[in-house]
Length: 243
Image (cartoon, rainbow, N blue to C red; front, side):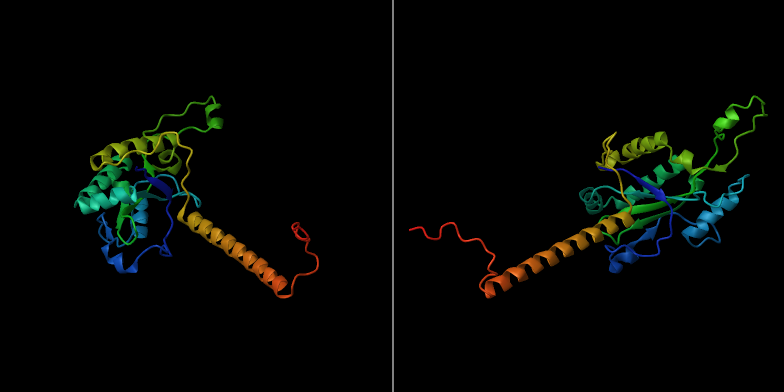
């Protein structure tokens, strides 16, 4: 089963707990940066600066989106063992460029330092379509001269529900050659972020520790009762006095 996962792009300041530092050297960038650009952050800014945007970028506006591309552990292990990992990477880059525009795909890193090989791609959500009018604009009768579509930053359009469904369909088609299948359409299953996943594990661990502490406390109380010959409050055994 295969399905891309999209999240707002954030700097990865802390390595995942399941990453193996001895395999970090196997990770590799699959996109060649422009001249003068040396990392992902610079690549994002370079795209924004050279895209010809007419509007000022808002303070809280999403400037980049991260996409995780992978399959199940068994699927990716099969791809790697049959020597098709490089081919799989190329097909992923091809899909990214066809889907989001070649210039908008600013980074794609193959991660080999975790249990399952996967790609972390970064796109800048710049579109060329005409901006949709707000409801208040639609009610105004005054007509404005239609402007030719200009590049604009719009994560909402890139991440619309219709587009997300289309992305999963086209990605499954691209990955069919590797035996990967699309996730179930209409599934109510929800993805959670790495941060939420680890926070859940920590919470489960704390609950487990609390349960263990409670059991140990109860065990200690039972031991004290036995050593003292009972507290005097125990009910008599129902079989006492019977022959």
